[in-house]
Image (cartoon, rainbow, N blue to C red):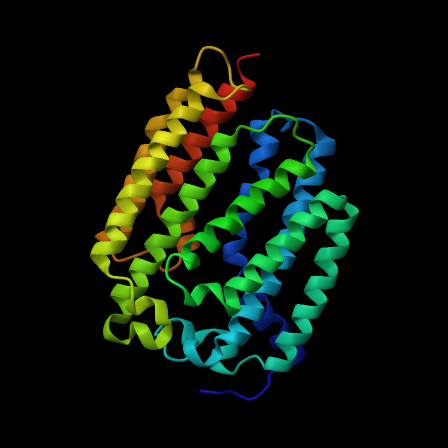
Length: 300
């Protein structure tokens, strides 16, 4: 249902909603290099990393607006997405297009200020998401891999912006697997929620089944635990006492808790809501972060 155009203040509010502020939590992956390269206590690099986070918030906001522009009609058939500003008519397409141009200009200017390597990663991130919005999300498996690529590029952005000399390849592997785990869980939620109408919302949902996605999830979960475990005792920049292995139980609990929420509680459609609202998961992630900080910065 379309609504009349709102005032300028309302337009700004709806634009902000379209930019998905809750999903900006994903930019935390940019800070991985800052933390794991031991530069968390260096103000210069902290400032650069935080500016990189702002840049990715802007460019991801442009991507979400573009995605909603491309999916207006499909979103109107979705029980939750039909309430988005563009699909509901609370925000005009013209305003959204203007916002995309402005956000891209600001994000690219900020990226340029942080250096050519970061600008290149930012541009690649935008192009990958552009390809996802208009092509890749219509292809089975490629849609999942493109989502994972976005997370890996966030980590790469953090690496170049804080001048990391040695960044363990295991962290790239873990990021890829964790992103796949989240993407698979989201697809499972959509298949269950939309049932026989899934294909009308997104063609690829007709090709996914719950048993298939559960198998994907089991494979990815097992591989994630293996990759993270290998990282904890093989990465060159970790303490020689292998204390990082003490963080493995938090990763196990976090993955299992997320699977429980998706498969038993029927969640998973909005990963950012799970990350920000489920108290056991919040406690787990907080304890993991504290343990990592103690291991990396408390054993000098």
